[in-house]
Image (tube, rainbow, N blue to C red; front, side):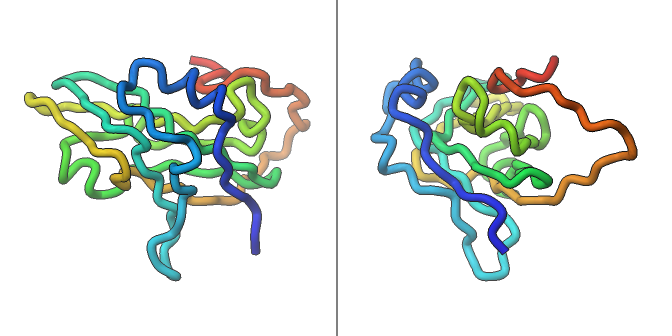
Amino acid sequence: MSIARFERVSEGQYQKDTEGFPCAMDLQSIPLPRRATAGSAGYDFVVPVDVTIPPGKTVLVPTGIRACIERGWMLMICPRSSLGRKWGLSLANTMGIIDSDYYGADNEGHILLALRHQMDTEVVIRKGERICQGIFLPVGLAEEEENGKVRTGGYGSTGA
């Protein structure tokens, strides 16, 4: 059962979101997220550029990817186990939730990963490394009136 598809964001959005990254690779060469095996639940996201994270800092990494998700589903972004074990990193928000209406946001639904480094030495992640995985899950609703608000903003737009 297919409930979503991955796409790359536009060149303009990608260039805007990669400012400050010296080695931004060509958008079309970024692989769309894929499952590693037939039994994998998660779709692996890769780092599209070399990323250097100083000790104690958080870096917002643009993936170049967005997800068109059917209403009633969401994409949960979880760290791969190697993120902490291999590099001493975590997701700043512990896990991310990509709502189905994020696709239409002002930033084209560009999935950004906030990586937090908690060790005392600098870490470098090379482009192409798999760091997070996205898992599609159904969204249940409580017995209440449907919220009719429409998303306009991108990353973090629904509140602090």
